[in-house]
Length: 88
Image (tube, rainbow, N blue to C red; front, side, top):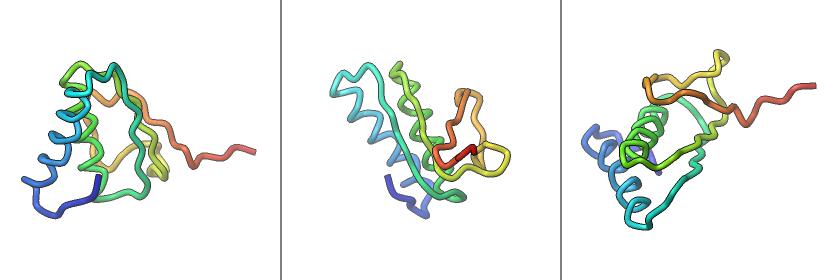
């Protein structure tokens, strides 16, 4: 997705991705990202935009914070899967 510095462009990235999936008549999507910090804002916004179009979405993120969350939170993001979590 990329991590634009400008907030207007951050929202454009999520909107454009969701619009593209909607045009494809997608029932569901899996998105993934690595790293954390500023890119969490883009990631959460993209998930929100996809969900607003009624598309089921699953997000995979590596790494998450030690708490298992993103830097930013949103009420529509119910569960996060930390794909870098290795249990012995």
